Length: 111
Image (tube, rainbow, N blue to C red; front, side, top):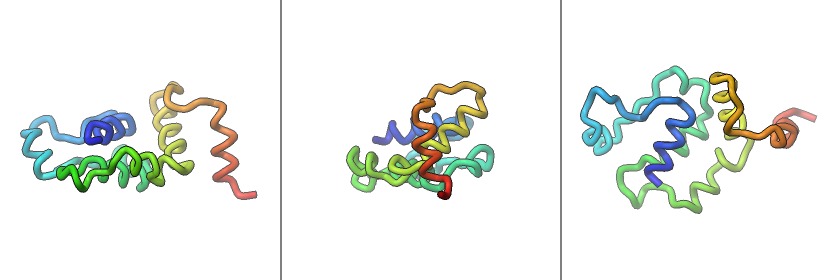
């Protein structure tokens, strides 16, 4: 699940959670992960919470597969919004599908 946390981090930000100029093992042991303002200020708190819960140093504190799948970020429109924002930044749709647009827009737009 640790690797899933790294993959989600990289997928949303385009960077690694570690400073490549410093000792990566030390950063992992100290849970010293970077969330620089760009792009993280535009990424939902729910996504950051999922990443933080996956990048727990102690395995017993790390989310399981089942708990990860049940996480709020994956169960609400927040994941779709974050992924669409990333696609817009890179100018290519590759993480979401147009068929999901109406579903999530209906969920977030007031009636």
